[in-house]
Image (cartoon, rainbow, N blue to C red; front, side):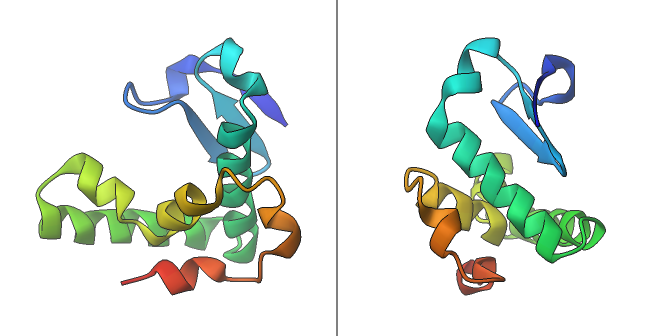
Length: 108
C-alpha cells in the first residue's frame, strides 16, 4: 500500500518502505514506477528477514559503512539492501525473477 506521508521521510530521501507500506514524500511521485519498484524491492527484503532483522541488519550495516566512509550518503549507498534496490529499480520485472536473499551478493 502506497501512502503519502512526508513527515516520516528524511529530507534527503523520497520514499521509505516499512512492510506492508510504502511512504512517499511527494504526492507527484506516487506514479514514479522506478521509485515504487525500488521500495517494493525493500519490501521483499523485509519479508525475507522477518522485518525486524531487516532493520537491525540495515542499521548495523549503515553504522559499519559510516565508520568506513565518514559520510552519511556513502554509508547509505553502500548498504547491501540499497545496492540491490538501486541496481535493479529500473527493471520493472526484477521482482518476478529475483532469487531469495539476492541482497547477499551485494554484501561486502
